[in-house]
Amino acid sequence: MSLEAEFTQALEGTIEAAKARGYIPTHFIQMLSEHGGKETAKRLLAKPEPQTGLFELWRLDLLKESMEAVVLQEKFHPLFTEEELAEAHWRLEALDYFEKGN
Image (tube, rainbow, N blue to C red):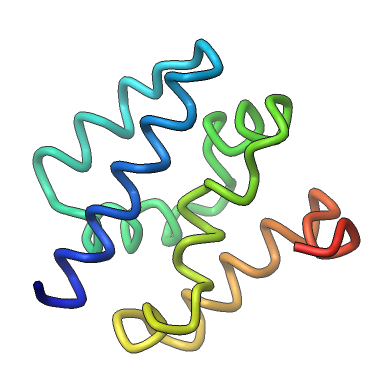
């Protein structure tokens, strides 16, 4: 399996975790279906503000399952630029993700 396919599969896990808590990230599901994981993440990270889905995952205590957290997994770093990695890190840092020992 390619690294991009692994990444997409990891994001599908994000969707399943959200659904298990009663949240269906419809827009994210549609983007993932249309563009695959890497392109979806790049598009979302390029937007100036985090998506509402990230805040919903925060509310559900699922930040570790967020697209941003998956992007920051070391094995997926080659798929992204330093700027994209920094944006993902900043978004999670703003929600105190790293202070909780994640």
